[in-house]
Length: 340
Image 1 (cartoon, helix red, strand yellow):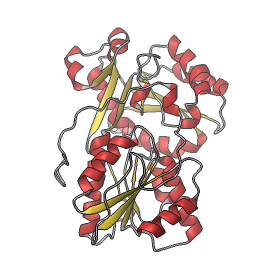
Image 2: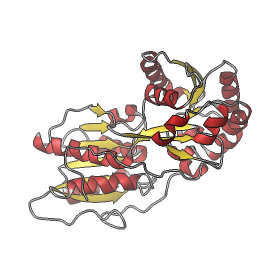
Image 3: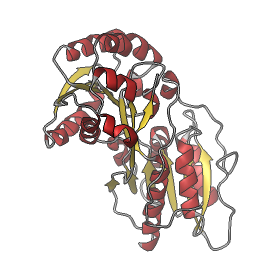
């Protein structure tokens, strides 16, 4: 049943835990429209079209389901699956075919592809875009005529939530980041200071090897940080970086690790301790409400607007937190949990 427009009901926690290293890979899919599980809604005369560009990955499916449920009464919804190898002409052909009043872009790869399409097509004349599941807000600004809903939950939110689950004091949070993310880290540090959190940052080269990551992490852990924050940066989350850079150091030092992907909090490997992410089904509802607002405003948008997710979910490794960090037992029912 579709949720009522412009009203967000509480949603059950989604089961997103998966294989640790599998979370760092991207699915390779064929580019097609209106096919497979992303079949869209039937075309109807007199209905505006919303065109959704999306990869065929597990985290997209609950967003797609709730988005189409919410939009189907007033819009035709079409899907175009995108692979990492897709070219801008795929986007151009889909827009020419469907003439959408609005497009939705799901994930970093799709958003970057759409920005390349706009760069090749020249300025002006694009339907408004709604961007979801894109990790860093800097990427949103590369798309003309776009609004978005943030996926990367601010560190201050994650660390403040972690404080409610464990008794270990959290005052200094360490992060290892590539040079390309220096601006993002600086912004997060300013937000964290509001909650009396100090962000201790260590930079590595943009092409950092697992050995360089391990050296930076060792230095950071030696500076008496109370927790680690792991960015959603695929370059530092390759299987080799995890196996040779992160895990040996985390095995030596018991420190709570805040991650941005629930599947990195896994019973198989002691990597992530705690994750706070947008509720994916709720994110689809929220995006649908943005599109209804656009329709009410004749599809003229407030460019550059980035909303925060209205509903988040938390996942914690309860057993590790109980042994190492003073888990607060009264909070046991407040989060999704994994156990070894």
